[in-house]
Image 1 (cartoon, rainbow, N blue to C red):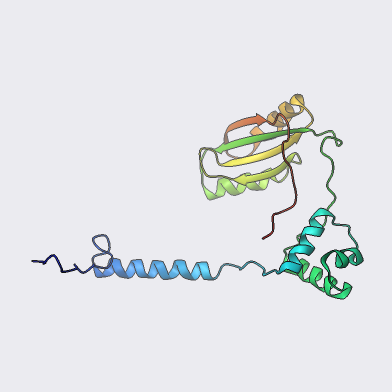
Image 2 (image 1 turned 45 degrees about the horizontal axis):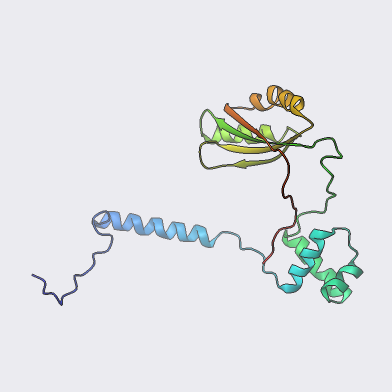
Length: 196
């Protein structure tokens, strides 16, 4: 019988992992998980000069190397080396021109929740391949929660969305439910990532 001053010994993996085989299975699962985490690609290491370069390029992708070097207080050669390194690391994905959505006649943003009949890998893969072929789909996210996917699509007006809904969205593989919400207006839209 324990006295008030005795501390009971804690049994490893009590109850659920009490027998030897269960403890061994748990240990191997833990090792496998840790090895998978350690094998994950690490994020590129950047310093304050890299962040300054990236922030400047996010604001103006056409800035000259001379202007960029002056803005971040580096020599032109050092600045160019850093930009090349950031491109090669994949941190700089690509350079693009951002088109004014309203001026292009596509002022409507619609957020579309899509639920599939089955959450099987084959059905998910078929949907994701097919959705790449719809030009109006600007973004597609695999989601947790009630629906499987969230899309942001651009349209000119309600009639244009009705066409898209009938001709494309409801014909995607495996689609069981489509729930759409029109954005009334854009309150905030940005392309610059908050680098830390």
